[in-house]
Length: 147
Image 1 (cartoon, rainbow, N blue to C red):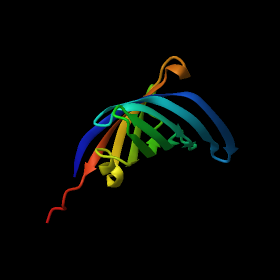
Image 2: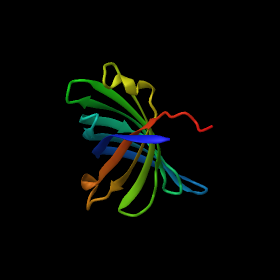
Image 3: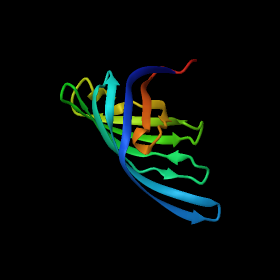
Image 4: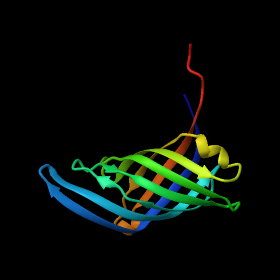
């Protein structure tokens, strides 16, 4: 298995809303966040999106993220992410996600049937406005299985 770095996403959530429902095992939460930021690397440009994660009672977020990268050369790349926003460590919570893309034009259309993975962290600031999310996205390159 081979991973090739594609790009880094750096973004904030300038707007967000949430609802907490108390249950037998604690509160479960549903959130809606609007994201703004940038992608840098093989795919580079402005990034916007919406995440509507559920937060389990163990404080783990389950992201359900759809976004768009408007590349510097004028292409549109749709992005879909799901995975885990872990509740640890404090101040730099871990992110692990599966990422897929959809684009009309090369060199980005080749990503239409590529599975990508991302790892990153939520870098907490003094306030919600200072919290920054950083995710490094890599392409999972197909290789034949060993005999």
